[in-house]
Length: 336
Figure 1 (spheres, rainbow, N blue to C red):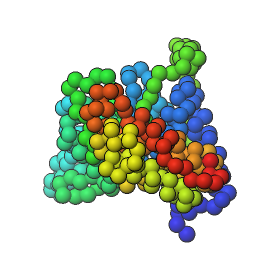
Figure 2 (cartoon, rainbow, N blue to C red):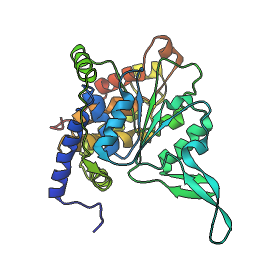
Figure 3 (cartoon, rainbow, N blue to C red):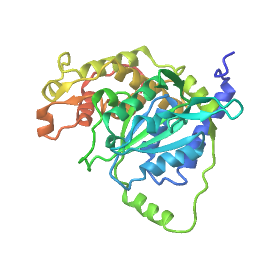
């Protein structure tokens, strides 16, 4: 039996730990329930997550707290304009064998060799460093000096970027954005949540976050996500959604008017996989329509390229997703 194969009893135990994981993180993070859910979904689906929000919304704190609730290695990389690929991948250093006196090169692993990597302000680093990160995200390995080094598993990158301070930044190209399973936007908290934040963070009492899941358990959950069932009618619905994003084949006038390029097949794969992960997070073994609708915005947000007319009229890819979900015919039957 594969070490990642698990019994039904073990699955129930792991699902209970998922609920506990969310509770541990919420000891520190007030509100942001949907954001937190989307990050956990990305982890379960084995993908990476891009977080965007203005400063002060606890993006870094959320990632750090999540790493504390998971029994995993965590590293934070502060991306800057002078950051080089070797700063994140690692480099070879010359060492000497004291017994023989011979010198040799030894690869010194960089901060990418961790289970959870926080790539803070990823759009502040040059394209060549972004490209080094891209290989790690896609291949789960890095190459240095002609040699390939496998990264630790699970491997989860959470990148952050600031949407309002764009001077001196290097916007991520569409090809690299597509490597992120989810693009999550973090907004301001509600008035009640903000009051709770102020009350809980300005005193001496600090919450203790306990580790809930280890690396093996996370890999087991990631393997089980793919076994979550999805009705063929829902697969066809996802196919119709993705194909409707493309202006050359879409029958929706709104898409033809405002979209320059639509999503590729990877978007459909991401939507089904994250819908499965969300279903499992909710304690279900089958995908429902609500899972697809909940995951559509963070999946499609960075995979639909708007045209100049859309930019002039301040129409975003989120607006396109809303129109899609309202326009594409839903399958009939009890799938909601």
